[in-house]
Image 1 (cartoon, helix red, strand yellow):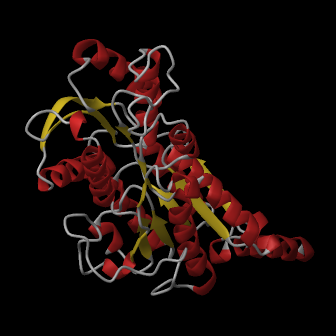
Image 2 (cartoon, one colour):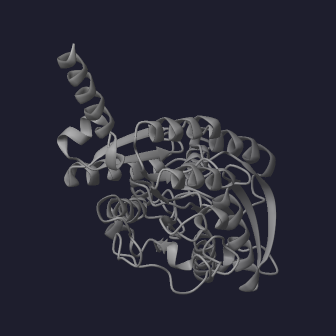
Amino acid sequence: MKKVLYVLMALAIMGSAAFAGGKTDSSAKSGKVVMGALIRNLDEDFVRIYADNLKALAAKAGVDLKLLDARNDQANQLDQLNTLLSQGVKFFVIVPVQTEMTEQMTQAIQKKGGGAAFSNIQPSVAALKVGPNFYLASSPESVAGHMQADIIDSYFAKNPSKLAPGKTINAIMLLGQLGHPAQVLRTDAVLAGLKDKGYTVNVIAKDTANWKPDEAQQKMDAWLAAYKGKFNIVIANNDGMALGAVESLLTNKYTDDPADPTKDVDGDGTVLKVPVLGVDATPVALQSMAENKLFATVLQDANGQSSTAFDLVYAMATKGSATGMIAGGVGPAKAVTPGEAPSDDPAVIGQCYLVPFKAVTKENFKSFM
């Protein structure tokens, strides 16, 4: 009987030890670092590229990566977090569904003595203030909008005949998920940037296409029927929607030469009658630029963001802290970003790692392919 009791006690001790240090049972046996990856929606091109790089980094470092897709469902992502926490996972890369839920997530992780790096959707200031082991590893969204404005300004400077009278831009705008920080900040910044450059911007039509090419194509089909000849640019919050608009314009033969849609007759850099701009610089977008379809985009560096987040989380898991380190080639921000939380708050600026956007134009797009 005593031998049975000793065996049972030994088994109980082994079972509890399997969860020590934030490692699951199988990972504890292998000695691997365990990392959770809570991803908003793998259907989006940018997010899928981000996740693929995360998997590659984990494989190279020997990390046991537990990657879960929330399918854009906030409640689902919270359940996934709680499940991994209950399994002993303590350190996370998170592409959250909503900013509003991030404080709740950091509080739950903090209780387990863990940490997290957030990308793409910004965490709130309150979320980062929960503890020093919570980070932003993302890009300041307003910069993307300002870069779009710079590209548009350059286009019309080279093609002044494309402008409406009075230096007027008649724009069609395809918006991401309404209320999404990237949707709000990119839209506001491109419009403000154009106004600052002396343009009058008349928005002919705008609506959300929820980041999706098919929804954008349907919107563009309807707008072409209603506003053909009344707009001189299409501005999209991401490449997916921009490419949906491009497909609509091609299908409806809204091109320089309807008989040959491969000809850039007027030499403005696109075979379409109007330039279309996106954000992300996805591989399919760059290929469209090579074919003179999509006019331009702005690189949101998915690999840069995921590498930065991974390095921060790996340092926390292996060293206990990532404070002040260089992660993904980026150091902590030293100056606040006005109007863009959380990097506009001096109290958490040292926890913000800002991966730069880059303008992608006809002159440089091949270097990103």
